[in-house]
Structures are given as structure tokens and as C-alpha cells.
Image (tube, rainbow, N blue to C red; front, side, top):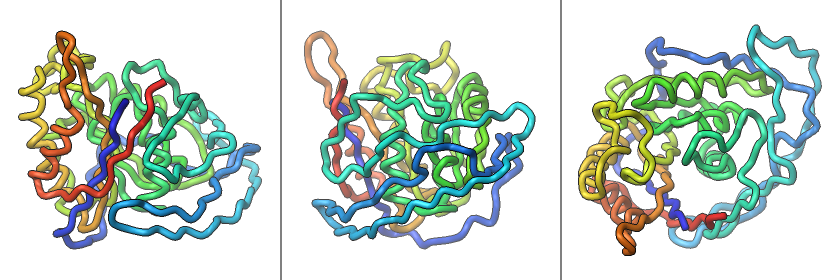
Length: 288
């Protein structure tokens, strides 16, 4: 089972992004497609069991139809899963990994899009800035674009950035700013202090899956203890860029070595606590 760990930063002041550098950008002109799917799921009153009570009223469903002209190279997509409901417990299970929009399971180790969709809907609002510093195939940014959030995706592997740009090349009804950049999760100088509303990411599980051929700084090549050491700086950099009361959520699972369990999830969580975060919630994602 994977553990989904959420943190809140209690000591930073809110600020509004003044804009970001002119990095490589993917097309983000968004108008409504002629989709038959509900664009927003019903949000029911829920209770988070540790610190806060969230009472979220239902959102009305409005379908707008436009004569849409897509930009060259863009595609029309199905914008939402069928019969989606926001998770209201701390045990999440998704028997179908999700294949709406440009999502697929072809990129080894990427997470189900149901996970970032739930996190983005629960912990952010439209036009907020979301960061995924382990971009991979772009799952989090795809959901951010579909849900009208601005987002920054960073990956140390340029091939992952290219793949994400391809997956983000679609037309949808929302308008958002989406940036991708090759970079290292432990050093994000292009992001100002306290500019991110939500960190939503899925780092590698030490060296279980190696995502490059020994790119310098790629933590997917590090053994267990080395990985945790490097994660300390990732946690500190995450703390720096996150706004006060912002949420940092990441999914990571325990691993086995020589027949024994290594508690990677809990040890990773501790690195973030040591960086200044406070534990808000632990969510278990069932493996299928």
C-alpha cells in the first residue's frame, strides 16, 4: 500500500505571484469542448479527522457549448472521469487507474490521476499555483489544466519534460498557465519564496525504478539511506516555496529489500517534519 502524506506550512505569509520567467510553455488556451461528461463532480460535506472540518456545499453542474477552434497540434479530450466523487475517507482505492484526457499508464510508476484530482479539488481553488517537482509524464499538470489551476512542473530528465509537453497539448474549457522546466527538485531558484499554494507530487521510491541513465542529481539512482538524505533538501526547498497554510502532498510507498520492509513512507514523512512542516493527514492508497 502507498501512503499519501499531507503537510501544512504554518509560518509563511501569503503572497501573490507576480509572474514567472518565460520558461518553456505548453498551449493553454482553453474553451469548452463538446464533451458529454460532467466537468465538476459533486462535492459533498466531508470531515478530515485530524485538524480541520471542511463543509463544502454542492456545486451546480453547468454545461456550456461553444464552437471551439483548437490550435495547431492540439487535440480535444474527455475532460473528466465518469461518475467522479471526491474521496471522503482516509482509505483511497481506484480499481480503474483513469484514462480520461491524455492520461495513460504507459509511463512506468506514474500515479493514478484520481489522486491529484482529489488533492487539487480539496486543497486548492481556481487560479492557485500548483507545483509538481517530480513531473514524470505530467499527470498532475494535466489535472491542474483541466481544473483551472496554474501549475509548474519540474523534472531532472529532459525526456520526461518533452513527454509531459506532449501530454499537455490539448484543448479544454478552462484557462490556466502551465509551465514545464528541466531542473532539480532540491533547487528551485526560479520560484520565489512563498509563491506556491499546493505541492502535489509523486517522487521515486529510492532506486526501485530508475528514471534516467545516471543523470547527475537523479535521486532514482540512490540507495535507501542516500535517498533519504537527499530528500532532506527537497523538503527544505518545498518549505521555502510554499505559502503560509499551503499544502504539500506527496505519495510514496514502503519498499522491500532482501525480504524485509523498509519504511520509506514514514521516514520520508519525518524529513518533511524536520524541515518545518506539520503533519495534517496520512491517507492510505490501496494497491491494485
